[in-house]
Every structure is written in C-alpha cells, then in structure tokens.
Image (cartoon, rainbow, N blue to C red; front, side, top):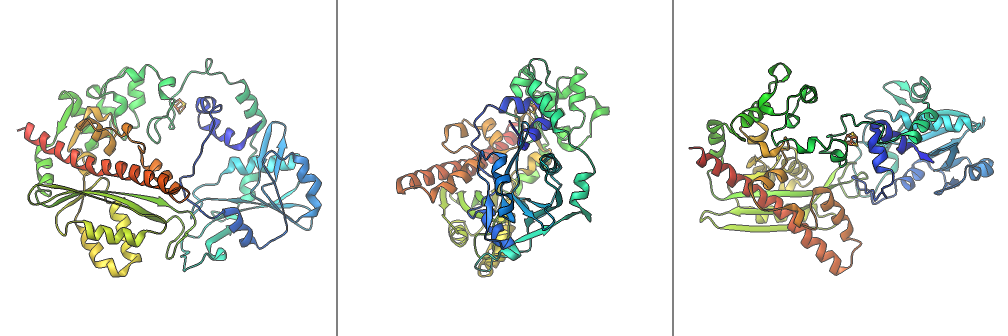
Length: 484
Ligand code: SF4
C-alpha cells in the first residue's frame, strides 16, 4: 500500500524513499498548533452533521454512507495499491464533489499538484465526479484580538494565479500506477546513487555516507565544501578534489569562495587581517554581551495580538563580561504566553550599555525584538535602544573575512564552536533548536519534576549557544594575535 507522501518522497529521491520506508516515523510538526485545525475549519465551513473517516477505513465505508451526508472529513479511498485521504469533501446537489485541501501557510507558494492530481484520479476511478478544488490557507493579516475568529483566520480560494485550480490539475495526467510499479521494483543495489538537491538541502542528508561512502573520506578542503557553487559537482566529477585546485572558469567568484580557496592554499586558514581588525574594534568595549534566543512558531495565533505564523520567544541565555573582566550568566525560560516576561527579563538582565553579540542576529534576535517592540509600546523605546547595540557574529564568516577549512562549508555557530573549543552539543540532552522547541512544548504536559528537568536542559542548551558566541569571539581575537 502506498500513500501520496511515499510518491512524493520517491520523486524527491528514490534512495531516500527506499532507506526511510521501514523507519518508524515520530514526526513532530515544525509549526505549532494547539488548536485542531480540522475543528477550526469545521466551524469555518459551518456544518455540524458530517461523515468522519478514520485510519485504515476501507473505501466501502464511505460508499455505504455516501448519501447520508453532505460533508465528509478525511474520508479514505483506495485504488489498487494507492491509498488517499481528503481533508474535506462536499457533495453537491448534482452528485459531484468539491474537494478542499489545507495549505499550512499564509500564502500558496506552489500547488501541491501530486496530491491534487492523485486524489482526483483515485476518486474518478472509483466512479465519483469531482466538480471543483478549493484550498484553505491562513490569512496573514488576521490578528487575534482576544478570541479566534475563524471567519477571519482562513482564506478559501478555488484559484491560483488567477486560474481555477481544478483546470490546472486537469491539464496533465499523473500516472501513479507507473510510479508504484517502479517503486516496488526499485533495488538499491541496481540503482547507483546520483547527486540531487536534497543531498545537502538542509545540512547533509542522513543517508549521505551510505550513498557516497568515498566522499566521506574527502579532505576538509574538499571542492564539495565550496559554497554558493553551481559547478562544484562538475569539478568533482572532473577529478578536482580540493578547493585550492578549483577551476577559475567554474567559479562564481564571491568573497566567501575566495576565502575558502585561500584557506585551502594557505594550509587551512584564511584571515583578512585588516578587515577583521576593523570589525573587532566594534567590540572593543565593556560590558560586552553574548545572547541567544529560542522561540516557537505558531500556525494558529493562540494569543492576543498574534498573527498566523508569529512566534513566541520562550527563552534566552546571556553571558556578559563587565568592566572588571568578570563574566556573568543569566537565563530566562517562560511558559505559555511569556512574551512580556521575556521582554522584562531581557531589559532587567542585559547590561545597560555595550555591544550585544548574537549569531545571524539581524534575521533572528533583532527581528524578534522588533516584533516585541510593536506588541508592547510601553517597552518600544528600550527595545529599540537594545536593538541598536546588536552586532552579528556571523558577519566575519559570511563576509569572507575568516575561513577555516575545518568548517567544511558549514557556517553554523555549532560548527564554529566545534572547531574552536572542546565543548560539544553531543553531550547535551537537548542538542539543537528544534529539539529545544519540542521539549518546550512538552513542559505544559509534564509533571513538576519532568518540567523542571526540561527547563534545566533548555537552559543548558541555550547557554551553550550563548557561551559559544564568547568562544568564537575569543577565537577570532586569538587568530588576530597569532597572525601578527
Ligand atoms: S544522500 Fe542524496 S542520493 Fe542519497 S538518499 Fe540522501 S538525498 Fe538521496
């Protein structure tokens, strides 16, 4: 039996589907929604009498009940090996059906045509007529003014880029029979791994070493670590193995690529001394603060003044070095709607002056503070003064002032901490940002003891991020001193 998600995974990468198909999935959504979206949508459509499909329903269950209802939630259907489930179906007077799919965003980035085409085909093969397709998504301008107004929260459309979605769907056939045959015949031994965009899309694919075992033996300055490069795979296939041997005609020639190639030629490290020295002067002030935030993103705006996809900052960890050179450490972890406490703790704990370092500060901490300044006008002026003090520690790396081949093309704070210290996230119970979010979500369900343990783990994780900023800052200074 196959689901649409199997087809999509296989089309992304055959081997990815093959390797992951037997793994039990403990999927946890990146977007938080404490409210059940289907319940909210049921209120939005305004029906009370409906058929509700359940897991493993045989197709017959729908057909046995078809004339008893006008609305259907998650009815299940099977055509041969293909199994589908439609979020909402509405039976019209002429006996045909409107289908409604949910898009979990505030705009339709692109149509999920595989899902729509497969669904229409399965239904029509079973003798059902599809009249129209609707997509419901979230209204980006909706603001929670105290309670959730479902009529304002959702937008329902039958059009995409001014065309009817059903017309776009009917334009092409999607042959899932052919695909299912191919999937069932697929053999990992017979199909050699080919590079695709998913191999390194969000970090390295977890099966990369299985697919490309020889590459794992490549050196730190492998040509494959070249950033923003369209041609690195081509160079690799042409026998170019290291950055120092990169072919100039295949380079885009940006400053980070330059830093990478120079590091490879210089024995592992590139430093633009002059530019880095100028940059470090901005930090020649005490107190100096190092801060990291954690937040959760809400699909449904649960709290006052939130919009769909807004975030709640639930934690920060701060280290600062005062004028006497002492290092101080502060943390905050809130629960529920802790936005105001977060702001108040931040204002209380941060030194009143001096630079504040964060990693990717502009798109992260600074953005979060701007949002909070809008929500709490009483703190607007204080927060804007704090924002003006932020300096992005990612800048020396993203601007090509420093490159160490041990970064292997990875510009994350975790990688830098790994290179410049003995600290390791691997030793922590919470070891990355999404784990922190999932753990935070669990606090409300936990008993006191478990809740306290989660808070301690969250503090440890976020504090290592904040301390990591200090470690990287100290490393940059050492590199400057060492290069004199
Ligand atoms: S490493 Fe690349 S080819 Fe291998 S499974 Fe992952 S995405 Fe597919």
